[in-house]
Amino acid sequence: MKAQLEELGATIEVNEQGEIDSVSLMNAQITDTGLVHIEGLTSLQTLYLNHTQITDTGLVHIEGLTSLQTLNLWYTQITEAGLAHLAGLTDLQWLYLSGTQVTDAGVAKLKEALPSCQIDH
Image (cartoon, rainbow, N blue to C red):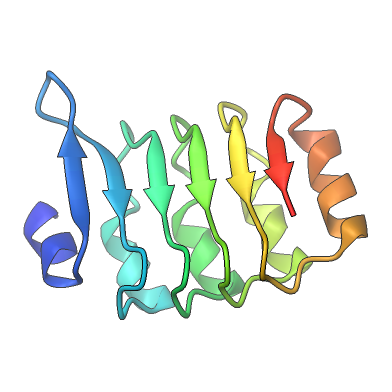
């Protein structure tokens, strides 16, 4: 999995147990289908997807990452429809949505599901 992510241009950090806990794909040429390589990273705490072509469709690969604490989606193709995939990420503390098509109403609805999350919109 690590090799596939590195082929996509990812910067990867591992924790003391050797598990991947941080992935940055900022400015990478990743698509929604490329996010399948992220799905099994259950120890992932930080994910940067800013300035990529990720859409709502790709967020289905993120919804099972329940250890995720920081998610950066700045300047992606995300809309409020995709936020439904994030509502179960109850450990999420920081979500960055600037430069997306997400509306204030979409942020308010997600905030109800994730009251402890700081959402930068």
